[in-house]
Image 1 (cartoon, rainbow, N blue to C red):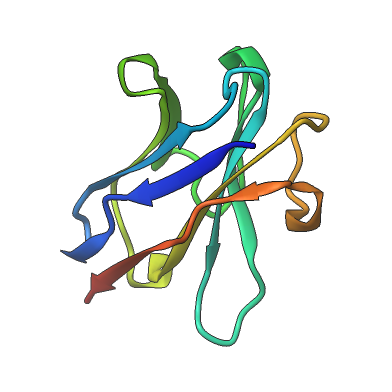
Image 2: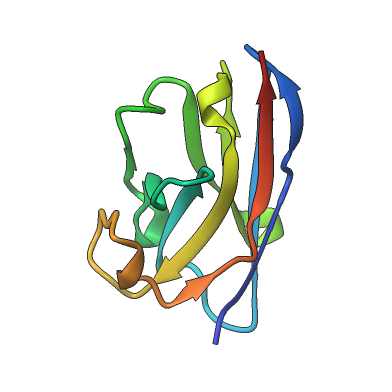
Length: 124
């Protein structure tokens, strides 16, 4: 099985940047679709960025398009999420997930493996 470790969250001011990382261990990672989700208090988990298996394609939710970038970090066997232009409404716990599924996929129930979540707080 794949084990995922999400990291990089923190407190940042409006307009600032953070880089999240989802590091994989235990099994093959490159053949899986990877997504970043986020969940704010009282809200459903939202799929915001997805990268295809083999890392050829990316997909973004409208809420983050143009501000967030998902990419493969081969040196660390990880998938990163660069977040620029952060807004208070980006405040949430961010999760990465992996699955041998069709791309793109925003439904969380389709994913087999999940990281533990990392908190991002954007102050106004």
